[in-house]
Length: 198
Image (cartoon, rainbow, N blue to C red; front, side, top):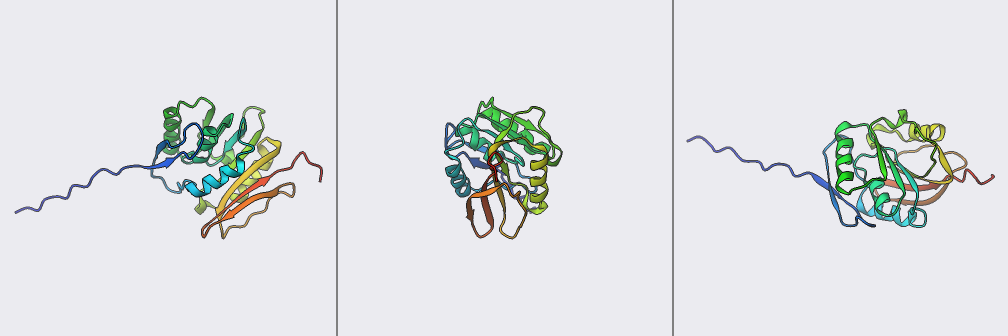
């Protein structure tokens, strides 16, 4: 008697959950992709508690957007606009679909490598999220590209999420504003203080 083939149910896509703001509690599907690692809920909640005094009407840049968890959370909490930069076609497509689900009109998605992306307009950014794929070790090159090519407001805030084992050099004009470390992740918020004389 031939053996019956085991029926494997279709894989259900994982989701991200928006923690606060106008879209609080909404769950959005995310694709499976190499290096895709959404910022965890606890760290995201801590980060946006830090950003609470600054997020309203801020212009944000999600430099390695991935699922868009950080940039979407910013929009949900009152940011004026978010630029998303994401190289992976399928991931960027999913991000676009999720933003349409939310009826967002205050964003732009750039399907490019962040190292090659330069804004077309002269708007400055108030908040920047730098959370590149950990295995690619892009932190230093991302910081350099940010400094050299991206217009920032005088008192911009830069969030960097990295492995605890990673080290990188920040500009002397940046000051650590907040920091939280877990067993694997180091989350740091810097103030640029570019408009403050040294």
